[in-house]
Amino acid sequence: KQEVTQIPAALSVPEGENLVLNCSFTDSAIYNLQWFRQDPGKGLTSLLLIQSSQREQTSGRLNASLDKSSGRSTLYIAASQPGDSATYLCAVTAGTGNQFYFGTGTSLTVIP
Amino acid sequence: EAGVTQFPSHSVIEKGQTVTLRCDPISGHDNLYWYRRVMGKEIKFLLHFVKESKQDESGMPNNRFLAERTGGTYSTLKVQPAELEDSGVYFCASSHMGQANEKLFFGSGTQLSVL
Image (tube, rainbow over all chains, first blue to last red; front, side, top):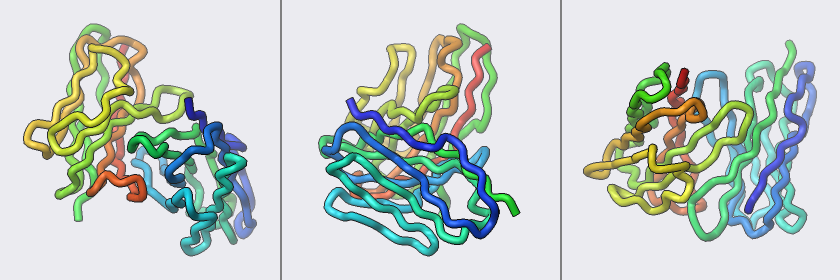
């Protein structure tokens, strides 16, 4: 059974700092990995999707990497801003279906 | 373009009552998913529709939960009778082709509280 872990559970940083969020998964036979952002009272917004054949994806100040063999992914946020404050969730899918397995998330607070 | 819409946003019911949650996916999205997050736990898959057919319902916790998607448009998730452990946030998501390399679009969720 796939298990996804995110560390740390919460993170507080001053504005402008670069930061890294971590995600690990127990079964390396994944089809893809997505990073989501969730704001309080809102749904999940997909930030980056990395297919199993890829090693990283970039969007603006965000960069996500994937090391399938070691079961790890990182989300790098450059020059953090207060608007980046949210919960960040990592999710993986297996090749047999469309079911996502989620981590419990990292709650990020960027202090102005 | 309208996103995934869920109704109601909050529901408070007593144990033993029935509640029906509704999800309107993005227009044209054949694939609709229900997920649930109970307090302190990760978001977990409940089921997946392709049009009106249940593709995968392996995550449905028990037979008190019934999901339908008549006509392949909106979906409902009924809990009858509700129990305390059913409390949580129920998310709906949709995608066009249902391929694993597609992004999922999520609704804002329904916060269900069973007292």
